[in-house]
Length: 148
Length: 148
DNA sequence: GCTTGAAGCTCCAGTAGCTATAGCATTTAG
DNA sequence: CTAAATGCTATAGCTACTGGAGCTTCAAGC
Image 1 (tube, protein in one colour):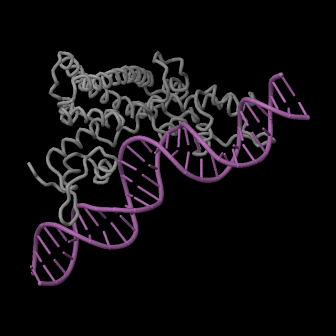
Image 2: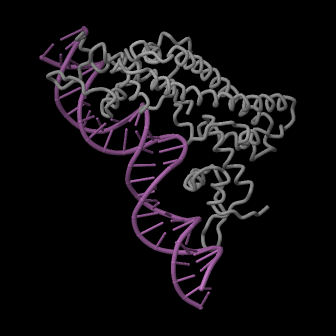
Image 3: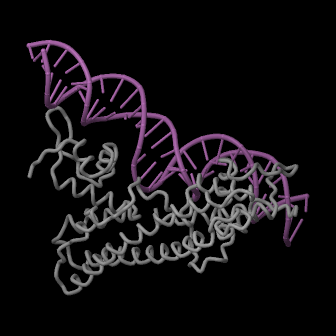
């Protein structure tokens, strides 16, 4: 390896901003990068994978602490099976939960779209559905913060 | 009308925090409330509906600017429904995409748990799944902040 | 070898959408 | 009438970034 990518290359390859990479380093999601004599960060191919992983998981709605846990699975393959299992299980439950909520949401959005077939606002179901929570068959939960 | 609710009642009825109501007023999602002589905010039943609408839409993943649009649509019922429909459709696409990706992740986590409970250290392909962006036919956009 | 423009560095401020706290005023129940 | 609950403003904090100022380093062309 030792492809020695600059931070710009890394960011491009991983599909995120340079500042985001520095931010991840700062909060410990990435190890502190090696530096050139000129103090510029140097990365390897494996770092690209790591950042891609983080980005992808973020897009799927995992908060950074959860991603940290997932990364620890990859970082320490010798780790006791129990710990890995536990992390994976916890994540699995969360993923299932998230899917369930998104499916309910999808149904509701579909209904909104279906019933809003070019009428007037006065008869628009989108507005109605949004003001009437009783129309949801969805489970009750706090603001969807866990989804982002 | 003129039920003259306090902010606490309003928040309770609408299912959110008092501070959130004040915040919505501050950013103009709610009109500036009437005040009692003692300078406390006074609300009517219709305000409850408005806040419920906002909260519900937020839970469905709509960002505040989109909700602002929807509210302005609702305020003008002679307008065509198309704009509302479009906003809902966009939301729907994003939700569908997210579900697809979560299903892939779920499968992988299930595999890990399965193998792990067999007593062996699973070769961790979660990272692979999550770093492999080609699995997404996905929308390109920033982190999924729009979902919370 | 020198210059120049791109890319990198650090540090700090700002974003959305809340949430919490401090320190005070008002309202309401007993 | 007093004490507890609720409200007020202002400010700070949260997560997960994103952007800018002001400076340094690198790489290419001459």
